[in-house]
Length: 406
Length: 165
Image (cartoon, rainbow over all chains, first blue to last red; front, top):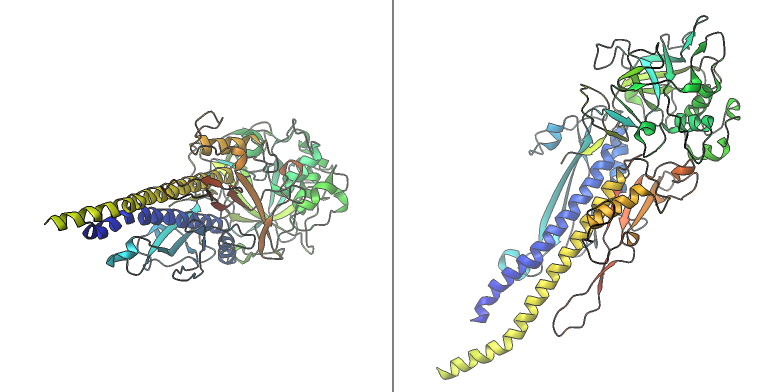
């Protein structure tokens, strides 16, 4: 009687032990897929080189060099390795330009996007899981079964609040144009700090149109370390708004009213820009060169913070953003406002991105420029912002952040 | 007839302890899997929570954002007032390792709490990846009759890219 019951018993125990383990393995594979998709999606910056960077970043989540990569089956097995009976494929992300295509159930019907169009990364992970009790029954005679997991990560809806961006404000050329605010893609603009009177700044070579800009106030009066205003501006120029739990300092919101940086009010054009702007540009110059320009030597504590910054991996003067092969160090996300004439009340309309270009016949920008000028290529909003929120503003277009979609 | 009934009795007497052992073993293995997965999900949730944090400083052991994140995943409440979801698992036993990509070696290396490094309070930059783990392991004692087993330390770990500021 009991002997007859044994297969039934094994079947039931299989439900307890094997099915439990299969669920665990699926969870582990799902986590591995999530990690890969998130890592890949963060590298999708709309350039042709993005896909290779994304693939590399995704595989780093499995990197076992220090023994901390994601694994499965109680953390014992590596993805992409065959161990005795079990084998698994090394997953490769696939890239798509729309979420519909990325989340499509039919994996063969949709074509993958190129680096310039890819916005979403999909990772399919499959691995063989061992069976214990069910392997004693005829249905599990292979002693293993295939478990799959899928994750889709990519850019989110346009952000209403963007953090860690550059606190530069430029006036929209055309406030009615909700997609590009009147800026033309792949066009170089000369950014010049807003000033009054004459002689007004001229465009640098190759970028005739001048965009006056101002710095938005994000001075942290309560900073305990690196508290000097010039040091703060240097760091902001080098890495964007500084990390803080206080969103008023770390982020900029659409429809919010912002003021100009108090000590960086526009001067007469006949005068040299204030030192605050120079310090900011010194920070911006770290995106090109690790060497501190002479004009920046006066920034307090610069020698202790400068080593944190590394230059972009692609410093070429580009006409087309698609050819950019760097790590997005040179990409700045700035606030487009209604007008910069009234510096005490600028309404943020949206965020747009520019690629800072080296000055003509140079490899970097010049922080000592008397007008605070630099050249930047308008690129739209292809690069995901590191941090941000959706606070219910109504925007049709703009940069998003990386989120998991599936 | 009597002999058949006798052999059934003997069979039953022989089998019942074995059956109990199997059932208890199954039960305990199920519990082990369940505990492991619970712990794993906690670490994943912590990695996601901390990995999207705003202004967290991984070099400050008392950073409020990270403490709240640990409390949230371990007890379900950010101030740590809730009951621990896994008995004995306290926030100080959970470690968040910060990593940075080294372009020269092509590998992820631990990010030092210095400049250049990940000490964001003193000018460092945020890490590239996070690994959340319980370095000493979370010990589970299997209770199977007739077997004296030493506790099994569960050591799941999760690596996620860091996407916060």
